[in-house]
Image 1 (cartoon, one colour):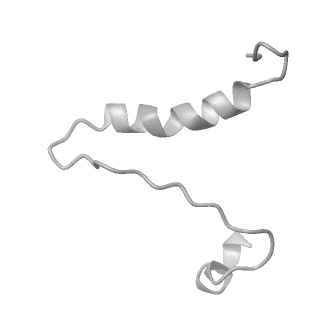
Image 2 (cartoon, helix red, strand yellow; image 1 turned 180 degrees about the horizontal axis):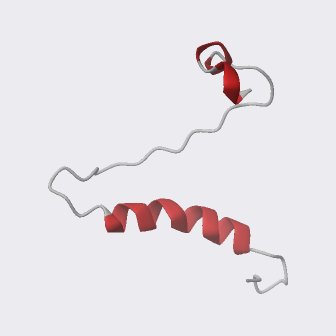
Length: 55
């Protein structure tokens, strides 16, 4: 997929579409009404101490 100025947009489209597809398929009574996506900065975070295999 490319934008009108020929820049590739497939990765952005795929990334943005994934959470929405997950929410569409979650049709239970307790389905979430909100979604948060969080990014960490480069380098160690406090999670590295909690989950040592993820660093």
